[in-house]
Structure formats: C-alpha cells, structure tokens
Length: 239
Ligand SMILES: Nc1ncnc2c1ncn2[C@@H]1O[C@H](COP(=O)(O)OP(=O)(O)OP(=O)(O)O)[C@@H](O)[C@H]1O
Ligand SMILES: [Mg+2]
Image (cartoon, rainbow, N blue to C red; front, side, top):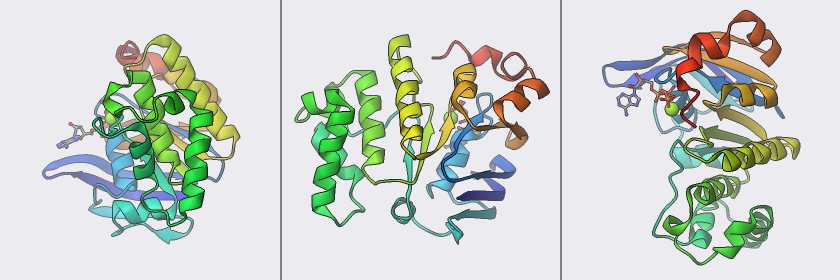
C-alpha cells in the first residue's frame, strides 16, 4: 500500500533521514519506534507532504506522492494525527471535525461521518459546540484522531497519540487504535510506549539516527535487540 524507498530528508543543513526504506501493507498496523531525534516525526511529515525529501521515492497504492501538496495527499487517502495533537483551540469540536473533511465533496456523507464520530467518541458529541481548546488533553486527542478519520483515510498515521496522557487515557488511546485497526484501517504508528506498541503491532521498524536499524515482527525484534533496554529505556517515563 505504502512504499518508502531510500528517503533522505532534513531541515536545511540538518539531515534527519539518511536513506529510509519501509513499506506498509493494506490492513497492517506498523509501528515505528526509536529514541528521541531518530527521525520518526520527520518521516511521517515527509510521507504527509509537509516536508519534501531531497532523495528517494514514496508511493501509495502504486502512485508517487512526491510533489503532491499535503491536501492532495489527504485526498489520496492518507491522514496524519501530528505530534502534539494540533487541533484548532478556538474552533468548536464541530468545526474541527468539518475541517478534517475539507477535501471531501459529499456533504451528506460528511454529515453522517460526523454523527458516526460522535457515536464512536461520545465526549465529542457532548462537547460538540464547545471550543476545542476547552477539552481536556485526552479529549483533544480523541478530537485529533476523529478529525483525521473525517477524511476517510485508508492509511492513518499517528505520531505519539498517547504522549502526555494519564494512564487511563493511554489505555483508551491504545484500545481505540486496536479497534480502528480491527475495523480495517491501515495504521502507521509512532509511539514511545514501546512494550504496548509491540503488543498490538503486526510489524515494527526501529529507527536510529535517520536509518532503519532493524525491522520485523514484534517477536523478531524482541529476539534481535533488547529494544526497550538498549534503545528506549530512558524514554519510557515520558508518557
Ligand atoms: N523543524 C526542525 N528544524 C530543524 N531540525 C529539526 C526540526 N525538526 C526536527 N529536527 C531534527 O531532526 C532530527 C529528527 O527529529 P524528529 O522530530 O523527526 O525525531 P523523532 O524521532 O520524532 O523524535 P521524538 O521521539 O523526540 O519525537 C532531530 O535531530 C531533530 O533535532
Ligand atoms: Mg517525534
């Protein structure tokens, strides 16, 4: 479904990705793990078209994404829940959800999906006309995910959706991801909660300073490296 080949990208003189290759098959939940600064967010931003790679190829369902704007990439069927849940705080929950559907031209379908989101995430229905900024952190995270789903993505990318949430809300986020995956959405997930991510992922890529250090099923990765201890031990307390 998604194929990333030898992608190099960065910010001016700073090179953040040094030849990353990975793929995501339809229906998979693929996790991307790695220490702070490994390049996880940069890779997601590059796939989403926010950042242009200076080398490499990215294809989605056989078509190249290079040169497409972020909006065009959303229209191709890819949505990103960015790091730090950037909802629009002064817009209402309803307005935030509508913005997620900005690339769609089926108003009746959009309306149905808004209702569906309020069923799936009841708090959004309760807070429907409140500014997004008045929601709690966990509620804003639900709004950020629901907003991404409003574009009807076939591939949903989530960058640290549980960061900064209380343990109960972390449980909720993981339950939500499991449920989305079960409902047929393909997921590319960045998480610092490595153990829990390995529990739900089909395959995992470990990024280290802009390169894929190893990849495989969670079992294979656990055998190859002490993934939590060796690479990520000091980041486990962040969420
Ligand atoms: N806007 C930016 N301008 C300059 N350098 C950046 C920018 N964003 C990220 N970087 C650098 O690119 C590298 C990769 O950062 P990135 O945010 O992709 O890492 P990450 O794996 O998502 O880390 P974290 O786990 O902390 O979110 C780092 O060296 C970082 O300092
Ligand atoms: Mg990041």
